[in-house]
Image (cartoon, rainbow, N blue to C red; front, side, top):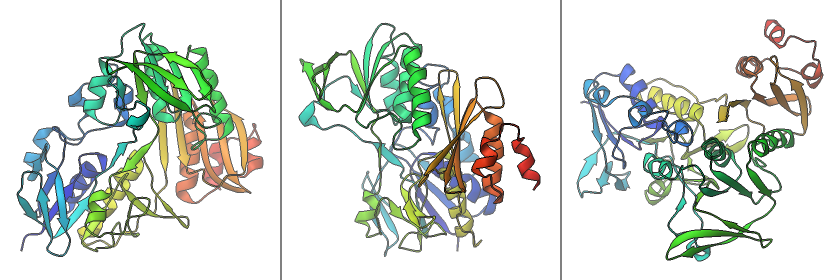
Length: 406
């Protein structure tokens, strides 16, 4: 009997699963259901190269359309799954038809968090950036001289600020926390990027909440902050985080907490249903964790593929991330959760710098800013189980690559 595998979702995890699984099993019936009009595509460039026109929609595709036909993958676009029945192994589609499956893979991803209508969050001209359609709308706003308010000082907000400022827009960024990047980075990294953006002409308000938006004839014209500051705007970009798309799983009776809970094999509470990517939550160093990264989407999806194909593989990630802002590349190796010590080290080339995170003497992660060599060494240290001490990180005479030889 030919195995039937249904994949729900249209992002990096979906494409990675299908690519890996097809390399392991040439016979299974593979079906992809995605609610967008295009095949799975890269999302990180949406706020950078695609928004500026330096990358086309075709270049965003993780696999060209022909790949699905050549590899016998049925690809249902512009279609959503409205119900999953884990007992009957059936999925109901938005057109009223149903698909049966032997194994189901949820790569449903996440969606942008929006601001409530009660404060004007539904006015025309207020955008989020999560999909190709979002980016297409935003691109039309990137006109020199326009005024934009960006709500949220995480990586999406800062990347968007860099694009807008580089295109000659007047940019104001509002962060409710005490500092930008507070949830994801140390104070030193926050300071570095604050100074970068301010040098580029971006106005940054930290520790100040948005009170409301005001409109004229349904169109956004003003953002009013909690301290009374009023910002005249032509449009707004909201970047205040994402919400995992776990409702389908919850309705199917699967265990859902911060996301769709999976075990070390990427199985949900139903052993015939797997999950991978932004939507999946797993145990990492003793804590239920979701990783919103390309690395996690690829590695977790490939782990699920191997397990469905019959290999007994456990997912043990070595997280990495990146952010491009102006001509600066931030590369992050590791996960800094629980850090209590920061060591600052000048980069191996002029203008570079690295911020090392430690918990006691345990090396957790590094933020390497325009410092690719330090990033690569630290990534290898974490992957191979080697380490670096705070004293070694602070020793500017020490060649970091020598630590790989120990």
